[in-house]
Length: 449
Image 1 (cartoon, rainbow, N blue to C red):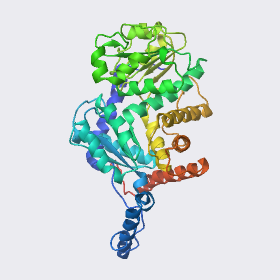
Image 2 (cartoon, rainbow, N blue to C red):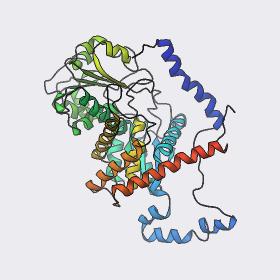
Image 3 (cartoon, helix red, strand yellow):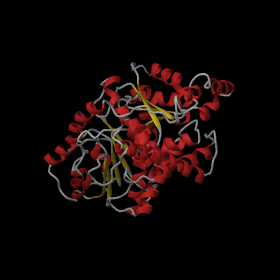
Image 4 (cartoon, helix red, strand yellow):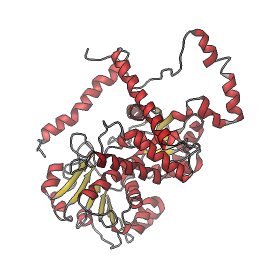
């Protein structure tokens, strides 16, 4: 791997921000609403609006499930945030979170053909957020919770998954975890180890790694071989703050009870000693993970350093220390762990079966399909997971998710995998072709022209 200077990396990392401040004001955002029906002349408004629209309304009144057939409900997703944990910026409020939620909606449309809308709420109260989502669910086929601080994000997700009729998903938890699992499946294959035998250290115990700890167990990792480190050290049953964990952080306490069977204590270096894998979703580096810690890992170590914009350790430093496979959250290094590989295809699959839930098993199936796609293309140390520009990822992922949802009984409709693949490919291709067409016709203006 070619060494790059820190100044070069920082300059490259800063360039998107410079471009963003030039292009966001030029376009004044990045999504809009356009018709999907034909408007031949003004007489057509009698069909799409009054008086004709009364008939679909009556049909839905008799059977609300008809909303999926007579409106776009089945392709609408709300991207809901209170702005309390936006990217690496923290609690910046709902208005300041809007550019991120718009960006999420853009990715949903282009990658998954999903019509997503940013819903930025003017409250931080978890009960009010739950209430708001339940109020708006008649309009949407699914809900994407985004950039909500923890621990309340766990409570909000768990409550809404129980109390809504449509799938609710928290991408900071489930999305990041899904893509991490996909990369881990192939990384373990390359080093000729097995999921059930590997020892895994997770550095950071926020939403992403807590979900990752849960999903890797469902993917085959023995929970007894997992050690999780938070800001106060390794999680274990004898922690001094165990009463506080039991009361306020039940997810962390569950980790204390089910992992770290050896009762290892200490910090990240002790957690990583002898580990086959380290998955870090911690604070930006470099220097958060030291080379010495990697040298003490098992042979053929696997390092996932997922912090952005700077990983916890530079990939070449991890390699010099003995890591065989390194993944980061950045696109300019091999093996990018990017949740954009997950949510567009996962929601495409959930919407196509009119799912009532997105289960952990559906996420695992998405991860396995991502791993299979990379394996089909030929996995190696610098390619353990597909890239976002491999468009077949999203329809294939959608089919896998839908099949698992049908198997688990959370689907309102059942179609064959072949039918769902054709549908997903058609919807996603249409979304991409529309953007290209609007660019060619200058409806989307080139700012540099």
